[in-house]
Image 1 (cartoon, rainbow, N blue to C red):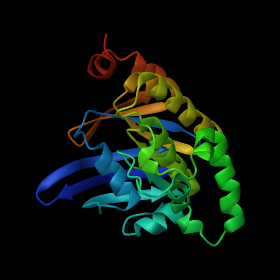
Image 2 (cartoon, one colour; image 1 turned 135 degrees about the horizontal axis):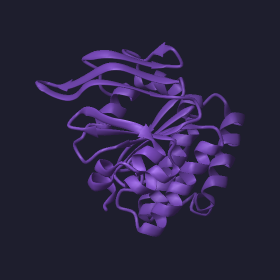
Image 3 (cartoon, rainbow, N blue to C red; image 1 turned 30 degrees about the vertical axis):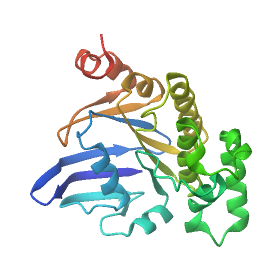
Image 4 (tube, rainbow, N blue to C red; image 1 turned 180 degrees about the horizontal axis):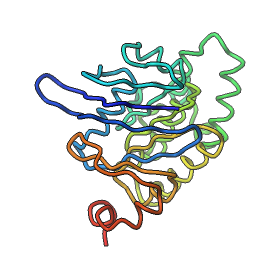
Length: 235
C-alpha cells in the first residue's frame, strides 16, 4: 500500500532523514518507534506532502506522491493526524470535525454517513458538538483530532504521538480506539514513544534513531528484543 524507497529529507544543510526504505501493507497497523528528534514527524510530513524529499520515492497504491500537493494526497486517501492536535480552539467541535471533510465537501450524504461513524467511535463528541474545541479536556481534544482526520476518509491514517500528554487511563482508551479503527478497515501508521502500549496493538514496528531506520520486526520480535525493551519499554 505505502512504499518508501531510499528517502532523504533535508532542512537546509541539516539532513533529517537518511535513506529511509519501508512499507505498510493494506490492513496493517504499523508502529514507528523513536525518541524526540528521531525523525518520525519529518517522515510523516514527507509522506503527507508537507515537506519535499531531497531524494527517493514515496508510493501509495503504486501512485507516486513526490511532488503531489498535500490536498491531493489527502484526496487520494493518505491522512495525517498531527502531533499536538492542531485544532481550531475557538471553533466548535462539530466545525472542527467538518473541516476534515473539506476535500469531500460536495458529497454531503457521504459526509453525514462518515460523521455518524465518527460519533459512534467517540460518542462524547456528539454531546460536546456545540462546545468550543479549546474548552475540552486533553483526551477529548485528541478524539476531535482523530475524528477530524477520519472525516477525510483515510485509507491510510498516520497518527503522530496521539498519547502525548494524556492520563494513563485515557491512553489505554485511545489505543483501544486506534485498534478498533484499524479493525474496521483503515490501515494505520502510528508514531509513538509509548512503545509497550503501541506494540500491543501493532502488527509490525520500525525503530528510528537520528533520521535512520535502525530496526524492524513483528510485534513479538520487538517485544522480545532486549535492545528495544531497554531503550523504549524498560526492563
